[in-house]
Length: 299
Image (cartoon, rainbow, N blue to C red; front, side, top):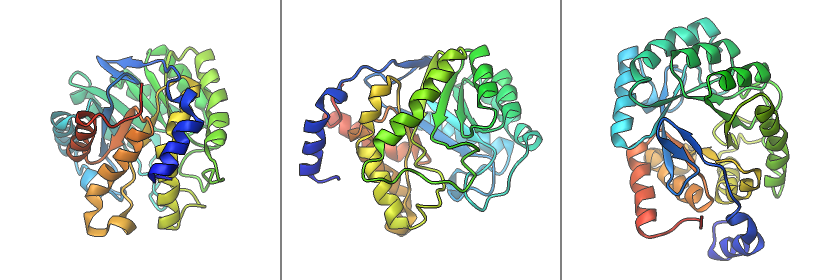
């Protein structure tokens, strides 16, 4: 899927899709879906996160990490108070709010803050505290969450998720060609969001979450790579695409912190607009090099 011949075949087969128009999302002076890639830094407020370097052990640590990521080039910082890993403890709304709100209070006037959650009560509290983007990782109560996003004129990131939430034991489409499934999945959800008054929508194929059919590290990484390099096909939906960059520990071992840079190349070739990363400085350098060399999908 990433050989020159395969890339050429993709380009030939889907040439009309490569330049399909996408309605940019503009939030807090940041344009997602324009000519430039946008970096979304990640700060985890749960100690269950497997990416230890992103874990903030206190409110002060979270604020410091977020400010560091902004200094490194992140235009958006994504806060999460519950890990999405399979064995992580569930965190109720009260405890999520207790973790998130002090950080939001400190950062909301400094940068565009996104909050990752699947709980409607957390969505409302986060928006009230100044979150500009809601990274929605669940479907239960989706209408309520989208209505809140609309009421605050915020941005909704719709993550791939079957009914329930991304913590449930579910499957990612791993057919020979997963993209038609993803298009069919997101199309009605985007329409529903629009009908509830959400003006700005981003979609996320959900490659960073746990799936019961992707527990083999090599199979998972191959599937992630295949979707990343052809996510431009989602442009037919007319909205920007966000991707969480994999870190593929089993492939990169002690060099795992460089993995997101490798996958950023595939994501950029594939037309990703918003890059969710734990390694802001590294990914920024990789994307800057690609831009300097004029290596990206045509716009």
